[in-house]
Length: 217
Image (cartoon, rainbow, N blue to C red):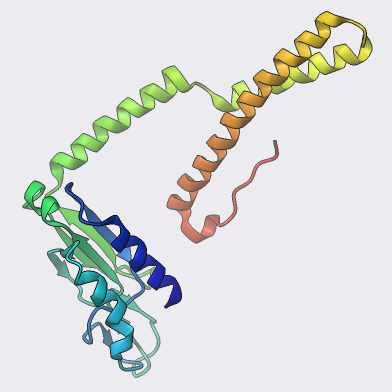
């Protein structure tokens, strides 16, 4: 509950955006007394923080269809609990921009959460696909092969150090080491950033199955 208080505080600090805004996912929180079936009865203290955030008027519940309860402990009948933990919120600007959009919660046989699918966003999906192609072209033509560039920079730096070690009094070799070290340092920074981004991509794809992503430099 303490961590969720931080969530509400951070959302509240955003203020009232004047751009389309949608928030969705597993809030792991109750917003009303009807958000649980089975198990412990919901108390007022369980929903106070969430209700206080909604009272700020930043967003409202989005139009949703399908299952009301979005999570289950999947226990046997009699001990099974259903809760509404996953929600979708939007502001007025979102509704003005995407008036036909809606969300639908459906159950999957694998997860203990239902999944949310969207509709009425064809133009948005098409725009995202165009952005994807532009970013791929930018990555190919401008960013290049970061992994290969990193390996080459490392090899050149190592060669320069070996050459200087064989002839320590050669001033030219000193300069080559300084130059290749700087190039390697720049590539190391880009490579580290690349690995961090790759870690985020893998987490999105594999969730908790990818809790650790590392590579030796």
